[in-house]
Length: 146
Image: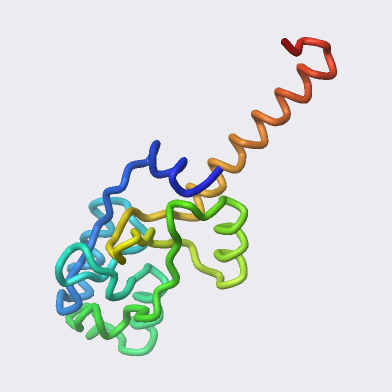
């Protein structure tokens, strides 16, 4: 199973925010859409950065209440780890675990945003994969193979 399998069910819509938008705007967008991260993109298709709940909490710790008026670019991660539609679920689990990240933008062949994968998506699809394998093994052991 790969990223394309997840996106075919989940879809490819990604919430983006401009680098000069306020952190308050980012917080509101995350709250309203139930997202844990936003892709920072001035044109809505390039990946200029990513801002996560964790980035905002760190900014609040460093700058206090004034954080909300600061630009998203002041707390975003600029060196964004991405994946492609061909990456496997196992590769995503490894990348996310090693780097301690919960969101991976999907980059298309031409470098544009192709979707967003969360650790929740990865776990959900991996569990489904294991359940299918378990069911197939159970059927095989029971002699229900056709």
